[in-house]
Amino acid sequence: MAATCGVGNALGDVHGGAGEQALSFYGNIAKAIDGGAALGKAVSARLDRFFVEERGYVPGLGHRFHPVDPRAPRLPELTREFAARGVVNGGFADIAEAIEAEVARRKGKGIPLNIDGATAVIYANSASRRR
Image 1 (cartoon, rainbow, N blue to C red):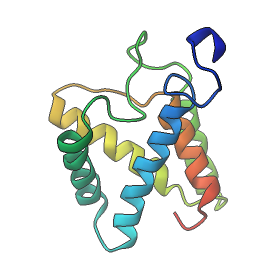
Image 2 (cartoon, one colour; image 1 turned 90 degrees about the vertical axis):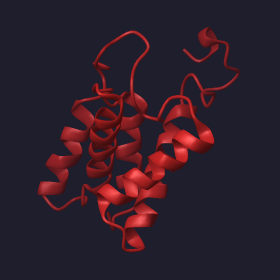
Image 3 (tube, rainbow, N blue to C red; image 1 turned 60 degrees about the vertical axis):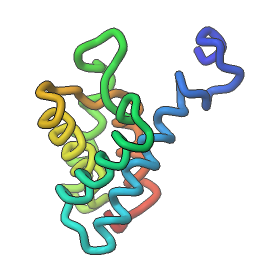
């Protein structure tokens, strides 16, 4: 798949790289929360920095061809199911949801999680049991 998109490996910006960017974005927010910031404040501050310093598309949101990425919704649901059973905490699903909500508030329209944002929720919860 990556080769068809002109990417020499699976970790370019078209496939894979966006997931890494979303994971880093979520990690920045988690670090702020670990430092004592409330979820909403941490998300808002990270988005403020993003829109000033980085610009472009918020990592993990939106899809070029679909209003809702058909692959994405089930992964955060699964994370919440496993969190309810105590397997993971689910904090990164909360972070992704808060990012969606804050971007929707700022833009005046919803821009749902895409597969890169959804897989970042899974990767982050796998890497960090404390969330």
